[in-house]
Amino acid sequence: MTSTIYVNPVTGNDSGNTGNSPQVPFKTITRALRGAAPGTTIQLSNGTYNTDSGEVFPLTPPEGVKILGNEANKGSGILIQGSGNFLSRTFARQNVTFVLTNRSELRGVTVTNPETRGTGVWIESTAPIVANCTFTKCKREGIFITGEGNPQILHNNLIENDANGIAIANNGKGIIQGNTCLRTGFGIVVNGAATPSLIGNRTTENRTGLIFYDDSRPALRDNISDRNTQDGMTLLGNVQVDFGSTSSPGGNIFRDNGQFDIQNASNNQLISVGNQVNPSRTRGNIQFVDTQTPTPVPPPNPTPEPIPVPAPNPTPEPVPIPVPPPNPTPTPTPTPPPSNLTDISGHWAEKFIRELNQREIIIGFRDRTFKPDATITRAQFAALIVKAFNPRPIRQGKKFRDVRDNFWANEVIQKAYESGFLSGYPDNTFHPNQNIPRVQVIVSLVNGAGVNAAYSQNLTRFDDYTDIPAYAKEQVLIALNNRIIVNYPNLNKLNPNRDATRAEVTVMVYQVLAGQNRVAAISSPYLV
Image 1 (spheres, rainbow, N blue to C red):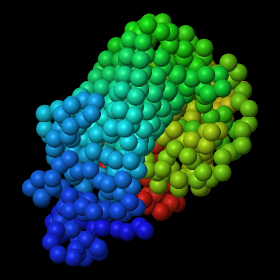
Image 2: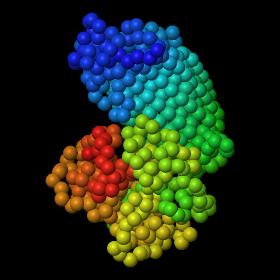
Image 3: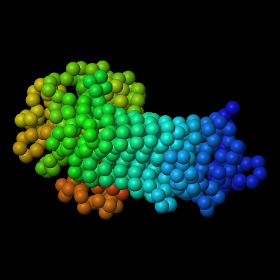
Image 4: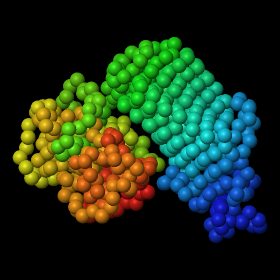
């Protein structure tokens, strides 16, 4: 029999007959866990749960018990802060906030462990679910999996943890999917004889994105590792990585990392099939069977959804250009049914993506994924602009010397140019396969859509406002005043020169449409 126990660290009371309704909640998770039967959901209210509020750590839910906060915002406002001694069978004494048991679930909370060598969640030889949570400022890692652990780690944010975002050791396995590891020591670490499946994760701005060593055997599909200060991925020891096959291409993207995108210092050859990797940015024994990542094939009519953009006139910084397919003429592919995307559940931009997908302004890939954290090209952005706004021409077209007449996006590029949304470069090129930075998306939308030019805010609200190019400052101010800009996960960091993601572009396009009263407003904590 399922039941719900309510907890509120501010208004709750652990004495008496409480916890059975939101009006009379328990005060602590510790009290709610006492005697909770399998199938019970412990619903948490906003607030801070720590030793001062009466919690006793580590918190260990019984088998089959779910601890639930707010999954929609990744646990913002529900902070669980603390550490307790845990004697691990494989790693001796540890400082841990949560120890998760079989079939237990942790969803929609923020976890931090400020103790020396502190870990947020410890999973040892159990199979729990951790979904849509935030792990931040843990002194070691956010999540540690060891023994025969076989969890599902789904769509979590792991931000500014001192050592690792996620670590999998010994014989650990499980599904590690849709997580973001940001500004930590190492994003995801796999060692021992661990065999996890890493699917659709993003490791960015860490020291190194992915590190695999010992006899581990991870499998990687559709991950992105970029802008890490050292390597995107480092292999050591006797590790063997499943990095794609002819029947199951990898679909991983490695780019813009400080030292190498991939460094193979292991004893084994890495075989890369169907990944987006620049061989000149790698080191070690790597065989590239196919360096291209499968991309959605846009149907000639209607215009496809793919996405990213240009600045009106400035000369752009050089950006690595993905290798185009050998046959530039795409094969028409049926559009996936609206709202049938499989990889956006729990994503911070899910509502925006679903709404535009239902309106068939954006579409997904053949495998019914959307890849919200992948980048988009200028040609793809042109296609989206034309589909979303059906803009009218305000100037004559222009023949770009790097856009062939039979190029799939030639027509939409012309329409985007004629309408003032996009411009070419001084050498009469368009760079259709170049990824588009965020600032160029903002400039394009403001200029092309004729967004209200009034503004009263100040660019100094952004920590990195000095990175905004001079040509774009006015458009950024206009976009800021009209709530077009989306900054995830840090509202105060614009990242103007970073390549825009498909999710970011979708949200900013949506905000322009909302300003035109063409779609209903959607609230998001990441709209500036």
